[in-house]
Length: 217
Image 1 (cartoon, rainbow, N blue to C red):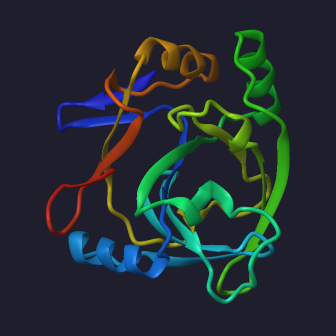
Image 2: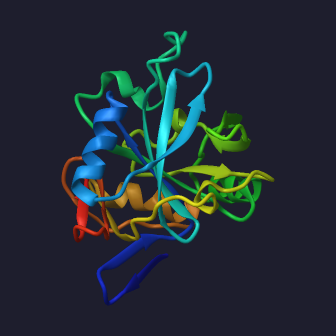
C-alpha cells in the first residue's frame, strides 16, 4: 500500500532507498548540490565492482543513493552495477524495499507469482572505516523495467539512514510504464506499490529542499 498525506506525499511502503545512477558521480553530486542546496555525504566504495556512492537521507528509514564509477578503482572484470558506464546521463534507475523478514518476503512473493531472484551478500566500507554488510536480491534478475524494487536486509549493520546523513524529505515517488497493470502485479506480490501512469518506463521522485521541491528523473 502507498502512504499519502495532503501535502503531496506518495511514498512506497517499505521503501529503503532510491538509486540515482550516473556515469559521472562527481558531476551529478555537484548538480544535486546546485539544485537542492544540500550536499550528499560520501557513502563508501564498492570494492571490486568499480563504483562508489554518495547518500542523502529522505526522512525516516529511507535514503537516496547516488552511485557512479569510482575512478580510483581499476576497471572491474564485469560491467559496473546498474550499467552506470552505459548511461548517457544521471537517471533514477530503480529502488529497494526492506521488508521485516527478507526470506519470508521472498517466499511470499514467489507464492504470489513473482520471483525477486537469488539473494547475494554484499559489503562496503564507509569513509570512517566501518564495514557495512547486507543481503539483497539480484537486481539483474528483477523485473527489467526497473520499476519493481529489489529487496535488501541490513542485518546487524547500521542502516545508512541512521548515520547522520543530510536530509531532503521525500515528497513523492512516481512512475510511468507502457502497461501499468503488468507492473502492479509484482509490486503487489512484494507488498508495496507505486503511482503508475501509462508511458515509457521511467521512475522519478520529488524531495523538499532549502530551494523548494525538486524533482529528479
